[in-house]
Image (cartoon, rainbow, N blue to C red; front, top):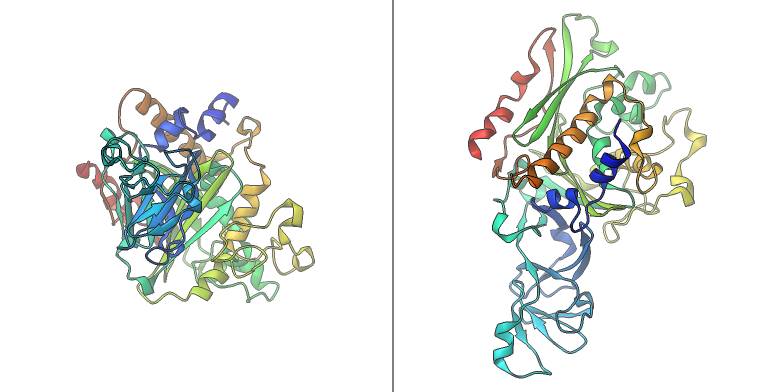
Length: 427
């Protein structure tokens, strides 16, 4: 378990906090491209690491991110007009380019003034259907990182943003905890339980069954953070071969990412901290085949308009509405919730905004969760010592993956992902 002091250190991400300093060394997804659907569309108001920003797409289709509040008198630029390759403050008409340059100051026509003033602006990269930004020290800006998901064409990729009212660490730890999959996601993963009740309607994923709810874990630090293996006994329909085990590898990509592999599609997920008590989960599904949006929404349980919609990414299930949990269905639906994201978000929200981890009682199955905390604390020490945190200078992570395969007992799980340790040379 963590001390209360270290727990506070990990969960606070605002300006001037130790973890905030770590987080500001990385690029973060701040919007989906679909949230800015075309040139001169409405701007997007957003938060990142406790600071407020406005994101807009100019007339040329280029995205930019500026401080939300106008450098003139502090009015919100999110109310502004997006026109003629800039965003114009509604209050006095000051107009700014995507790089923060002052284009017009109608109430102060001195052209020299525009050369001395600038709206704070931040580096932006649009890649793979997401808009990424860097808000850290300018002289320490790292290279932008490439992932396999970026190479998928639009028809074979789907990006989803879900805004959840809880701390980033609760969600990231959950995503790195493979032992919960066989329990929380029983209808999708623990097929023996579901089959015994004649359940088939929630069997969306076609993933390998995970009937063994007590996998054996091994963890190893990597240049991008760490990865771990979860080794399980084969499910009942394949248990005849006692010499084989199922092995699944999950990479934890700093500062808040993970990859979840599947037989016909993969997910890369980022838990971007908006502030200490709210997080934007960015989910990218990518596949060799065209993506069926309705199918993905069904897997995740995001096909319920009471909970979430593409036009309003705020997650609406909460204690106030009982998370829309259907307890009458729990003879055939283990959680009473429908879909992976519904189940994961409900658990994250159940902690409250920030959970006191000093009250926990960890077991060996929590080894991957313990490791992410240790690595984050190491990252804090590195940054405080003037060094780079894990993986920040890597640029090519396209071969980082989440393999899932049956292997002979005694095999080395690292053979499934040898490239993960070879990334050191890219720094």
